[in-house]
Amino acid sequence: SGWELTGNAGTTAGTNFIGTTDAQGLMFKTAGVQSGFIDIPNNNTSLGYESALGKTSGTENTAIGSYALKSNQSGNENTAVGVSALTGTTGQANIGLGHHAGYFMTTESNRLIINSISRSDKQGDTTKSIIYGVQDLTASNQRLYLNSQVYSPYLISQNNSSDSMVVILPSTGKLGYRAIPTGGGGGGVTTVL
Image (cartoon, rainbow, N blue to C red; front, side):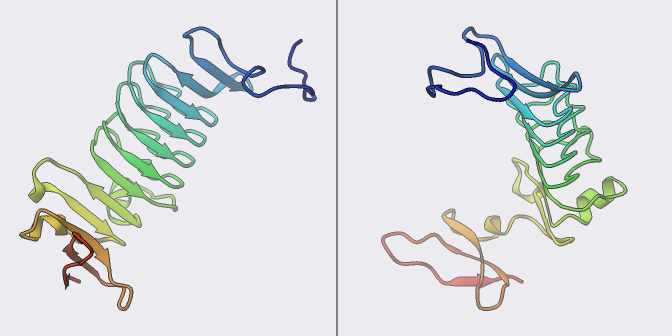
């Protein structure tokens, strides 16, 4: 009737499971250290050795990968995927994708970092990542870095139409924007880079 170390036979998905039947979270450990946690009251989910280990009051965080969001104690709505992604942040609404993405971030909020190389400092996180973005309610405060080149403010805000999108032109690989198609037709593309 118990789960065997070498596996079980005759199980039925949904009837047999590893988990809880009450409103308590579920924690996994390796070497006696938290390596996964499904936190029901705070909507936090982590999987990876010491991922989200420092969380005490933050809500709606997702950490996948060893040490991801390790020091996040009170930040909310962060998503970290990759070994040590956003490991030092206590900020809000950050997204870090890749190995050490946002590793040196501390209190910053509303950031997007896509990276796959370890950086030596916070400056490297912001200017050498494949993609680094800053979201803000004021369009002129927003920043988007692609391969260390800044595009600011977001290109969409420069278009007079509120229904526009950023596109990468397949023929040239350049960045542009155009009207979102309505009723089958698409607007012309304005090349900006």
